[in-house]
Image (cartoon, rainbow, N blue to C red):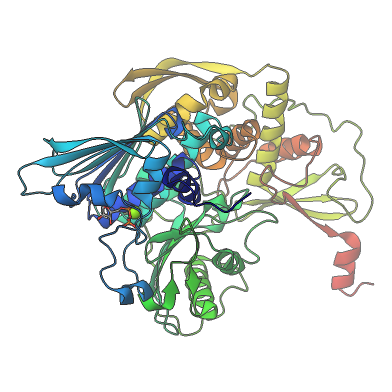
Length: 590
Ligand code: ADP
Ligand code: MG
């Protein structure tokens, strides 16, 4: 084949492929444009997962009428007015590629007005061709609408996931930008439903509550300060170690408030948590590194997802130290008290209200203080038999059954001390109860025998838009587990029935906490297990609650007959065994 120049149309499609991979890339580019334009309000509306339509409206600077068509030219940008700027880019955009790329693979319209200028301007494109342009009345700011994405690239369209999954990606993206830009109010509408609204009051804590819900937000630790050695500022928050996640999607990094992906920073974060999380569990974090612009090259990835640092080591240690300092400050655990080395990091206790934050190691801290333990209430299989489990052998592996245990007492209102002929056992009361409840819930659900308890009087709760989204998305699971919730008007909902195991808890609080946990946990993990684990976690007895001997005995008996008595549903140990042999050795009897 002879060499030929590609037609502009084909070249445009090919170039678009680098920038626009899926609906979330469109949203990312357009939101970044709104941020660069100094907007304080950005509203995003999507239908059909953003494939059918994305509409983004901002109240930013707008584009002067005479420059609107230019903005759709490839490599046309208002953000790089001197070549030197390329070495120190302060804006999110700089290549002038997004608008032409998106226009090449969609039907797109842009309406814009500069505040103080009388008239706005409209431009409409179909598959890269200008269809319409001219003056147009509109509010100050810019509104961009993108319809029928990849309608002219069927191959690309085939690679898209379901609308729900594409919407999920967009939701995650907006959560991240909302966290990085607390001074901007973001609203995301998915179809008719408002999925997310951030307050835009420049308060990171309020933003975290808005996007994550209060129960997760109350388990976040604030990181804020300048690393004394590098001068780099690290800001944001991390989850306390009790808030670990099953995958790495909850680690978000920004460099100069640009969302990036970085293996190096991921490692730095994980290393800071070393020894604090169970195996194969990952922390939650949203951290911004403020680095001098000239120390970072943002022009190294087609979708600007990655950056290059001039000195990786500096960035690594700044982040690692900041996180470590925050954890150390909150951790009473032995071994972590070592000095973080002249840290200047300040760590705020509490997001706003005093005591809102808790220590990472106050045990079962991610659910509210419940009333009575409800230990016996509706726990399936809470029979009293030990069913032929005799004393087991000496050492123990996770697969092994527990021997019959005799309760000795409770320590620190958190651990049950028990003994069997092969030694002493320390049982984490919360983790053990979680395991018992989890197994019961999973069994009930498998047998389709979930026990639901209608409430004598329905309880009304106010839900945030994010919680409503979760409620709608997971309604069949929630119903399957025994919840009956009804819309009541506005943000009000009525809880009419709850899973039986929750009867002793505050129904409204249970629902809200469950929604928050499912929203965070439910993205990748098997949702059924998530709901079960969350229900179990929520209704299990907490650390710090005193237990009667009968309750402790009942719990141990129930734990003994579970399939996997050695770990809780999150993978933490339930039991530590001190063998008789080990104790004798330690006391010099052997
Ligand atoms: P880049 O962001 O890299 O400059 P784009 O193709 O995304 O390239 O946008 C081209 C230009 O259009 C921008 O430089 C900016 O001047 C203008 N523009 C795009 N979106 C907006 C917006 N929401 N508000 C104001 N100006 C915008
Ligand atoms: Mg741009």
